[in-house]
Image (tube, rainbow, N blue to C red; front, side, top):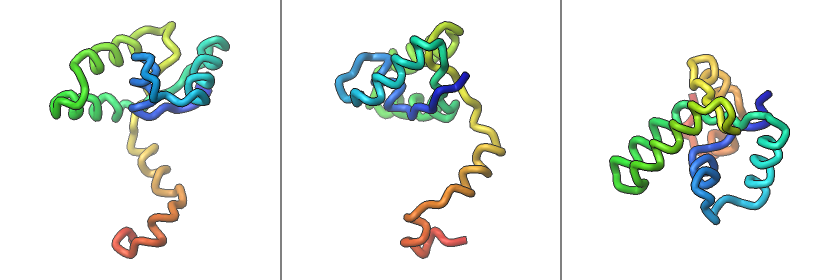
Length: 106
């Protein structure tokens, strides 16, 4: 069962025990793991990590550890494909910024 969805930074901060991970996020991930539930990470996060490694903002270990975690069926993190259907559904989510920025209007 998917308990929630993590963004790229949350997943990395969890993996590397980074103090920037909020207590609430850490508690949520730990509770999901204890209950044998999963926290999904979009496959697009892997692409983001590749770019951040290329820019020198993350060490190569970040990509290696993330892919290792996602390949481990016992790990709390699991990959969620970023499909066209998901992107289409994202368009349906209301965003206040769209209403405020006329350049974002359809």
